[in-house]
Structure formats: C-alpha cells, structure tokens
Image: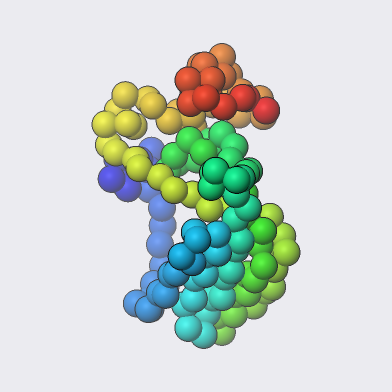
Length: 137
C-alpha cells in the first residue's frame, strides 16, 4: 500500500530499529496513551458529547482518511538519545480512526486527492465533506 500511495515520492527511511509500543485506550474511550520505552510518552484526552460522539471532529486532507478528531494533548515527550529531545505537551494533537483501502485511492475517495494547495477546499472536496455530513470550515 505504501508503494501505491507514495509511488510518486517514496519515503527514504534510515536508521530504523525495532521497539516495543504500548498503546492503550481507556474503557470510556476518552483517554489515549502511547508509550515507547525510553523514547516517547503520549497522553491525549478526547472530549465527547452526551451521546458519546467526539466533539471536535473535522474534515482533513490526510493520506489515511478524511477526518481527524482534535484531543487535549496532556503529554507528548520525545527523548531518543540518537535523535533529540523535546516536550510538546499542551500543543495541538489529534486522533485518527481510519479505514483506507487501495480501492479508495484508486477511486479518488480521499480529500487529499482533490486538493490544489491553495489552502481552501476545492469544489470536489466541499461536496465530499457535505456527503460525510460535515461542514467545510
């Protein structure tokens, strides 16, 4: 799938290593944590309405889907001795739940495939967003 998606510009990946990843979602599906020991600590909290739906879901030009949900970024600390260290806790964060297939790409069903890099939604994107029951913002 990566070769299909990035055939025009395949990613150049160097310095990879195998690490354990611990990802957890709280029982109420509001708190998300991700830990890569000695490298990454993340914790995000999603706000939901009374029906349990995410409050801050927005359309997005993303390679993996058409929408993201903003979450409160409680912890985001990266500390890989080989790369560097930073703490972006409190900055913007999002959660993506996606289902993407090769057929979706082939049939141009993703917003990113209709962008024109002007910073505004194109007519095709606006129609897709409305079809998803969302408003182009």
